[in-house]
Length: 447
Image (tube, rainbow, N blue to C red):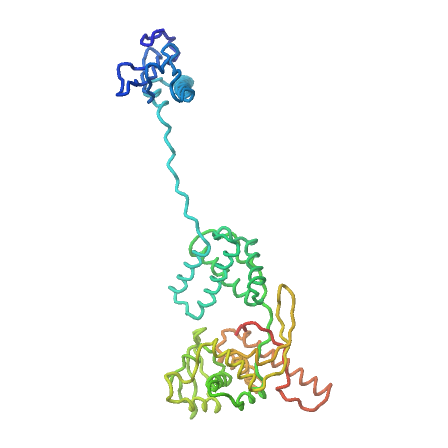
């Protein structure tokens, strides 16, 4: 059949042909290839976007021929166009719908690409933790309380480096949490209670993510179970405190010793000692007292200044903006170990730690265990031994819960039991309190 002749078609049949429009050559002599369709007495012509020379076209068969480049792919493309139009024609007929030129043209239109749905940006665990830190700061959390929050952030960053990948929020499930705990204990060599404190911050972070940011988390706080280890608090006996008071020290260590003794007499934390000013000193019944708001808990406390404490204030009166000399906690802790050694705190004590799930016991000189917080423990234990009621001690220390103060009462109770057993079951010869060496554990105390 000649290419330009209209074929005879059945009323309900679609006939498709391809021809080359020789009347529309381009500058290179290539003419466009068109699809012609005949159906229901109608005729349709559609450009295929293909072009070729006369030598590349088989007019009888209506397809490309050699030497047309890409011959096979080009002919397959024409067949695909014909099949798509035939399929659309049958679809309309089967549905009882009118077959129109526009409907058949639409079958050859390039498929409309579905709009690209942008994938949500990945939520990295440490990025979200940084947001959490910023939120805590904005909500007025104290700098001191933010230190351990920042330490947990450091642990998470280092954990990612061990894994050699950045963690997504959804990655942190119970299995990965267990890996994190193993890293803290095994690689970082952290003690049980330090690990517990880290887990406490991770739990608080995940609560913030779920409740404040409304993001799904892969592990619930209740699933992250961990136990705090019971710790015995390091404190000085009355005899050991006396040794410290009388020790001959280099002038460079005297100020640290005096600051430590003042905390032993008042129960102050290092953070409160560094902020003391003359405004905190008031008179009461002819004596002096301290009134202050604790830095850590924001609890208002009132502390009676005993004669030794008052004497230390007088020693440094007018010499500085703050009442007593104090440097950083780390420097003072380092100095205290040397001071304790010079004062003769050399008695060995049993140090109990938990390493890789095992209880490890070591003998260690007591002076190596002394820190600024030892002063607070010393004040609490010696006050109870002198008969200060637990409820009064709770107010002085600023504890919100009396259970925290009762930890000191247990130490005194154990001491009383030991003394009764010594007197009734052993030699009744008095033993100096400095000789009693309670078991100590190197862990941060709760109080």
